[in-house]
Image (cartoon, rainbow, N blue to C red; front, side):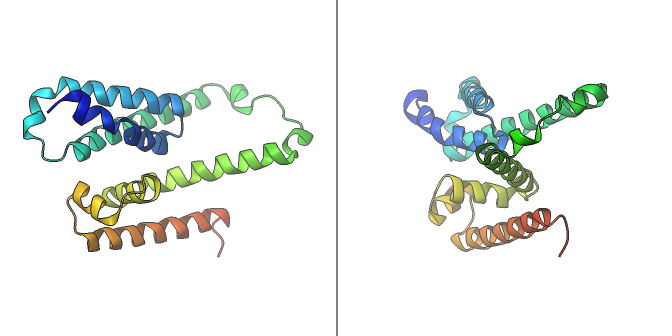
Length: 177
């Protein structure tokens, strides 16, 4: 196995995975770099690896989730240290009422909500959602990568989408039916 031909071609897919988890481009780039570094450091294991794509995906996913948990912890810690910093500067109502800014804020908030909901999915479901809806892989490719049957992929995908839709709707309605 060769690093340049067998591992580096996965960078773009790993970047999209990391970006989907962290929602920050710089963090996603760092995670991909760390993934490549870990893969290189573990090159003695390469001959034993059955599916290099799944192996790299797992490394990247774990790094991204760890980084996200760490950044959330730091954010919570900094918010609790100073109540005056938590309140922040006053924002004028007219600045928030501009269509461009309010649409951007709404889109960002929707992405944050969706990322939080996806983080609550069970491991096969969140991987399948990312591989199918973000990466655009076929059912067969997902089944091969995750070691599942195509029927299992379809069932997990349906349940994951249904769960995301229900939870997102509930959050948008402030928990009201």
